Length: 330
Image (cartoon, rainbow, N blue to C red; front, side, top):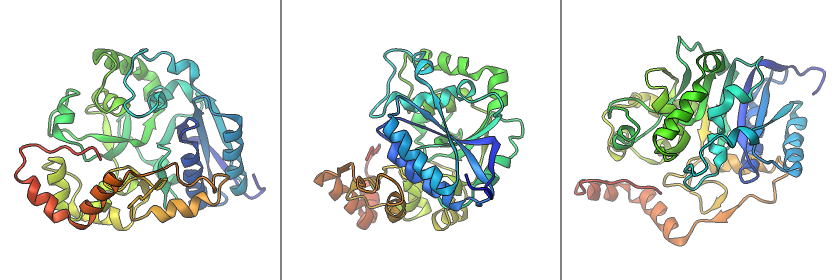
């Protein structure tokens, strides 16, 4: 940390990662530090699930370059409290770490901004840490979620549902109300198979206790690749969402890009069609992972589907009108 840099420690930015996703955290850190004020750096905490020493050193090198400090916290023992046969879909158990943040984070930290590994920061986001919870337990951004997925966790189809990739968390209230216990009870209620994993848990437990933030703070791939507002609602079976003008603003001026895979692939997959993938490529060369941009290539069949959705989207929606039900997991 340089003499002129000040690390803010009363609040925190938090990531959870294992060795499979650590290089994406490095990219996110480059974007976070690069857009912060040099004399007002955020305190960063990385909760590692068996992170290797080599990867920790690589993350430290990113922080040192900007004068920042990263504190590493372990969650190995806490994760063991999860049911042995808990569903992780195609992810790792690390995705559930955010459910235990009230216990993992130091007691001096009462408010945190949790960021998924696959996020890219486009501006100074420290103002988010000053948002008032208005008595709510958590703040997030509404997700484009299918109504039938809401009802599977006990919500109504009309209920709003947040994406768990960017969360402003009221740790003080989480501790006071012992929400970790409620999370575990919810998981056991579903025998370890909650739809959408920990995201389903958060939405199910916090129904009515969520504050919604502007869309530009979590701009996922559907916002970029579905061409019109009407189609965005139609694809996900939604009757309401953020206003159309706010969707346009988020697409034009995102504060946080969330590189989800929806009809784009991800930047570390060769063949990715995300319109802002170059931001990821420009950032990774500033890390020790510069020579490992791609983890894998997209299969030819999937590339064709992504290409068709991008350039022949109108045909897709014409065909969709004749389907009783459509759920795409690309």
